[in-house]
Image 1 (cartoon, one colour):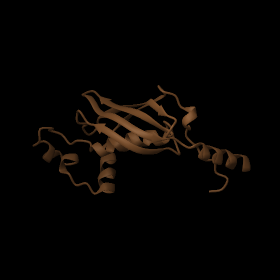
Image 2: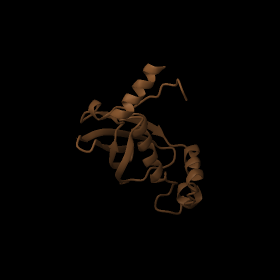
Image 3: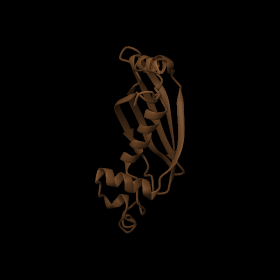
Image 4: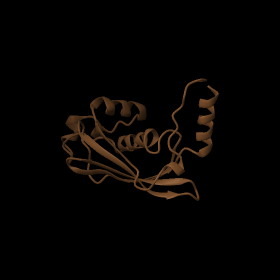
Length: 157
């Protein structure tokens, strides 16, 4: 759309080790139903209360892929923000996350590699039961070219 300003995330030189972003989210049935509809994941452990009650978990779980989606959107929208691209991820789910739970997710830049223009972001997700998400994302921040292009568009308009 011509004339619309586009928000561009921070490029490599605007970032520092220790930069962080934190967000708290509550996972509702609506969120899980949207996920299940998009992915066609029919695992009854994720939505059927009667089924889950017969498992060691006793209650329906939030699909781990939803946690990836939440963390990924935080990276895309906040740290480093729009224009970045996730190249790799290494994640663990030490404890289950149940429906209606609140999850606190924190992102922190733990490494900057100027040679290949990437950053390593540590992600930790916790709730009252402990850690539910732990790992890292390798991210390519918005490039200088994208930032220059966005600046040129702003100047043009």
